[in-house]
Image (cartoon, rainbow, N blue to C red; front, side, top):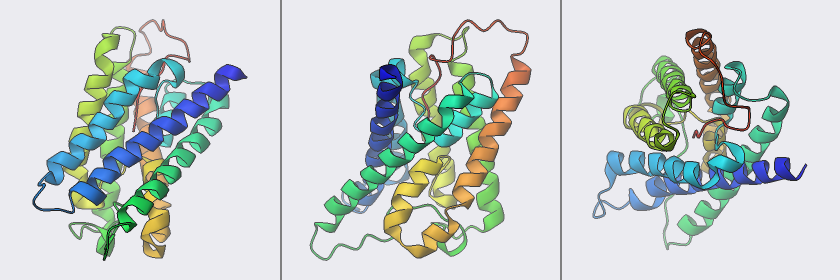
Length: 244
């Protein structure tokens, strides 16, 4: 029980860091043109948050930080199904607490206009005014490829010390492509935290940002299981993967 509690606490803390670092860079730093971090800076912030947490909590929980990643690992046979629900709850709690902290900080500026608060959306809520089909395709494909990278980078044949770097860079690339379309989700927990504080229109679209990334992750898990089915599996369920 103690180990399970530690893993859930690690997932909550890791997801807290992901949302605070990634969404915080968008809400606080990117809002000031003179700082100039832009799309590249925000994308790097998401990637760096995963990379740093992978080294910090990877040995404790596997550092999923993402309900879609957790379910993709289950489908690939790399994580126990019985533990998935606890991980998802911990990830959502971490994301919501991070969004709350970020909201308090951002609202502390006189005349603050929080805008979309780094929430995800399509149509009128898309940063580039992309429609639902564009949002569906980008979230589906980006989540699929991201989870596929995770599964490959954490496979027994891959150098374990390099996995966080590969996964962090993959998440950076995912956000470089997807931020203009949906503000970059690929993570239902990351979407949930900001949506609560961004307002009702974003909450209406929130189920989309649960269903589509999870569908992409399940597809990646199934494809990876097929690709790697003849390879020996030497890692147990405890050694999984960092995600976002």
